[in-house]
Length: 230
Ligand code: ADP
Ligand code: AMP
Image 1 (cartoon, helix red, strand yellow):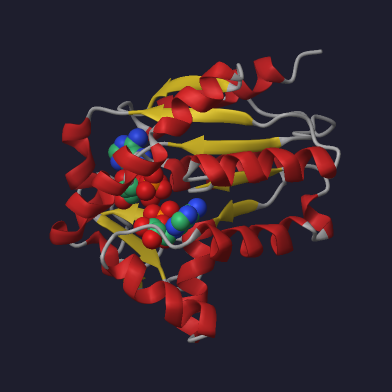
Image 2 (image 1 turned 60 degrees about the horizontal axis):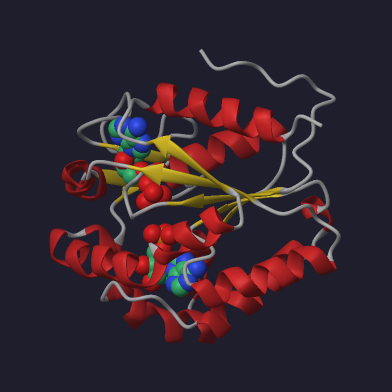
C-alpha cells in the first residue's frame, strides 16, 4: 500500500522519469499522474499516436522508431511545447520518456522557467540490466486505454484483454528482441548522460526500479512528497 495523497496536495512542478526502456517508467508515471490528477505526458505514446493516424510527423518518425533510434529533437520539442501549453498542464505534469538528450533537457529547463514552473524533479529508475529483456519482450499494451501489462510479470486476468476496458492487448512494434539492443544502445549513448546532468543540478533522485511495482511506487511517492516539503 502506498500512502494516499490528500486532496489539497498539489504537484505544482514537472516530474521527469529517466531510465532505460523497460525500467517501468510508463507504469509508474501513469500511477503518479493519477494520484496527483495531472497529465501523464509520454512522448513515445504521442509519437505512436501520430504513427497510427498516419500524420506527416508519424510518417517521418515511424522508420526511426522501428529501428530503435531516437527521433530528432526538433520533432519532439514541437510536440512537447504544444502539449504543455494546454490548460490541464497548469498544475504540473509527469514526463515519461522525455527529455532523452541533453539538448532536450536544456530546452525543457528554459521552457519551464518561461512558464513559471519550479525546477523539475527527476526520478531516476535504476535497474539491474538483466531484468530488461523480459520486461520489454513481455510488455503488452491496451489498444483502447494504453494500460501496460506484462505476460510474465503482470498478466491481465483474461489473456489478451485489458482488465479495465476489455480492449485488445498488442505488442509494440519495437518491443521485439532484435530491436532491444539498438534501443538500449541509444539509451546509453544519448540519454544516460542526463543522469549526471540532473545530478549536478541537484534534481536527481535514484529509485531502485528492480523491486515490485508496488514497492517502486511507494519509494516514488516518498521522494515526491519529500521534494514538496517547504
Ligand atoms: P518503460 O516505460 O520504462 O519502458 P514500462 O512501464 O512500460 O517501462 O514497463 C515495462 C514492462 O515491465 C511492462 O510490461 C510492465 O508491465 C513491466 N513492469 C513495470 N514495472 C515492473 C516491476 N516493478 N516489476 C515487474 N514488471 C514491471
Ligand atoms: P518510449 O515509448 O518512450 O519507449 O519511446 C518509443 C520510441 O519513440 C523511442 O525508441 C524513440 O524512437 C521515440 N521517442 C520517444 N520519446 C523520445 C524523445 N524524447 N526523443 C527522441 N525520440 C523519442
